[in-house]
Length: 248
Image (cartoon, rainbow, N blue to C red; front, top):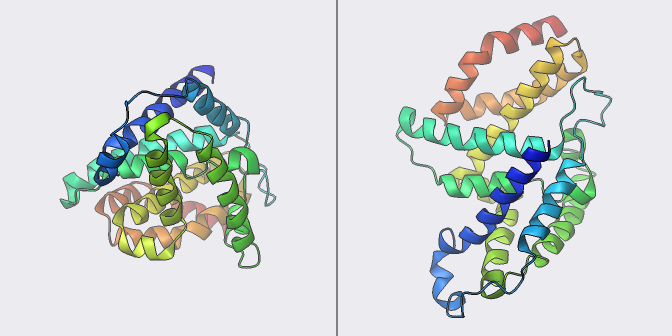
């Protein structure tokens, strides 16, 4: 786990810095006119602290699920990041669709950032219309506070802009309609939920059948758009159907 923590800290730090040169390149002239020096020598320490906070929060602890396998937010973040990047390449090979893989990786790395302070939020609560808006407000405050702590000299405003933009789009239904990368990430993350649920069901924890039932309809919808998701679903289709039929 210590190696995983160190590895993700490095990745997160590098992605923050190199954000400046890719996704927001049209702003480069304004922000790179400075010395180019990094004024905050604690950038790595700050990102390490963020990663450590994700390591200390365990998922699936609410909703009466009681998982047999532990999974913290750091593990989930790395798993969904790697899965999304690999499937984006597969989407190009199977469907000829060239997704912005760098944007997808950034989305994956920061999508659960607030949970390091806020704690894990049950998928049922996230979809509860009575709780959803208030949860988003709390998450937004934490997310922006984290970003504002990442003061990296002349690049700081630009990096913060990039990631605030990512956050707004991640939580906007309009952005999912407009940007294919956000729909693609949503599909990948839902599949990662199902992977975890399958493992739990295989170990006799049938409370996770409802996790599969909850996310499968959206997965099936995404198979119509993304051939990589369709390919993945076909691999696990019989397994998923067997679990759902046994749960009836």
